[in-house]
Image (cartoon, rainbow, N blue to C red; front, side):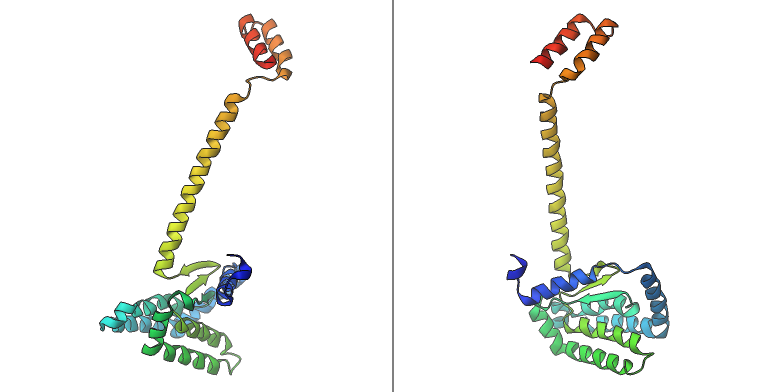
Length: 229
């Protein structure tokens, strides 16, 4: 399917993944590390623990487990603990039913709360960096199933099914590359077997080797016959 024929939402996801896949500069990486240290000390650790507790709490009932709700919070731990430098890319269409189910059972509230809290933090200049991180959480909670999290240009979190599909695709690509390498080696071997051991430019050198006694007259005649066909 060409890029022009792809649905708008799919093209948006592809564009976001391309942007998230760009590696930040070394200076930005350092700033992200410093920010994450302060974030972890002043609330990030508590948020990460809260995610773990929420995940365990969701395991109490069979229905949330069936829809994979606990996994949402467990996957959220890393994002909550150190969000700077990470980008969230949503793909609602990957699991629409599960995402809607999550909205009904608290997801929509979590997303709205994160966005509201982020907006309040952005009301002050000092709070803007903190508010932007809250927006990431809100975005994640809108459609956690099918969501990906990128860090320093690399995808560090994705859906299990997609991870398995990517692993299978990578395995198939490696097998295809290995098969192509074998075919190329075979073609080179066939070409080498058809290529004469010497060319006509080697005749003077072979004559010199004959005169010096390095090769015999029989060897010289055989090589000459191969060259002249």
